[in-house]
Image (tube, rainbow, N blue to C red; front, side):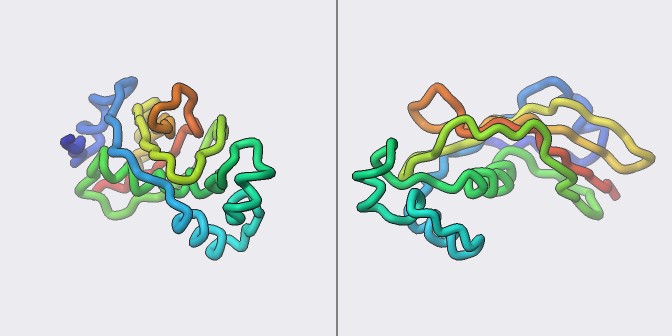
Length: 154
């Protein structure tokens, strides 16, 4: 898989309305889930108690935190696009975020990204990227969102 290389607003402009690419799959392990719980102080049993989840969870397994699934997007995004010649990138926002279904422990996820829109705000590029977090062997996505980035090209 080759990355889309972006060096300027003009480079990015050609992708408006087009798919930018698809990342590799990333396996979400119990270790990922446990570390995320430690970092965020979110210790719900549905994420951490493997034995209880086998019995009491409707999924019969632990599940990743919704925000954990969201937080792996920058890592996966970096597999799709390389933006060069920038002074700064700002994660400006997330629009229309929907958690569609849980990600069970040891599931593999990837993102599919499409450039929804692009605008030049007096030298700052605002890009809206539609992302879908897909789960291997599952038709329904884990989440859908529009990520808003501000790119300050040099």
